[in-house]
Image (cartoon, rainbow, N blue to C red):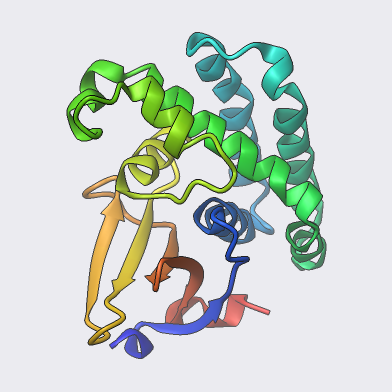
Length: 205
C-alpha cells in the first residue's frame, strides 16, 4: 500500500530520538534551495526561544543548542545539494543539539498550555511532570501529544504513516489535523523513519 505513494525510506538512528531527528532532517531537506522559506523558518526558530523563557527555562539552559540549530539552518541555506546536511545529521554531537532544542520547544509548548493539555496526560501526572519524564530526556520516545505540540510550535505540518507490525495495515495521521503535510514519516515497530513521496522522487539524492 505504501509503495503506491512513496518511493524511498531514509532510516534514522534508533536511540529514542528518531522522531525528532527524522522530522528535523526531513524538514530542512525539504527547504534546500528555497531561500525565502529557510529564512522564514529561521525566524520562527529564533522567536521560539521566547516560548522557552515563558515556560521558565533559563536562557543558559538552551542557548547553546538554540544557536547550534540556527547555525545548521544557516548551513542548509548554502547547501543546495544536501551533502552537508547529511553529514551534520550523521554526526551525533551536532544532531543531538537539534534534538535537544526540539525537545525543549515541545516541553515549553505543553507547559505554556498546561490547562489545555492536562486532560491528555496520565491521570495523577501534571503536565510539567509529563514533560520531565516523557519529553525532555534524550531517550524518551515520542507519541501523539509530543508530535501535536511540536508541529504547532514550529508550524511544520507532517503526516505519519503508522504500520501495524502484525498485519502491515497502515493508518495515516496528519499533524495538526486538517493541515497540508510538508513532510512524511513512517512509524513501524516503535521506530520513525523519513518517507519520500513518489511525486518528490526527482528531488531526492
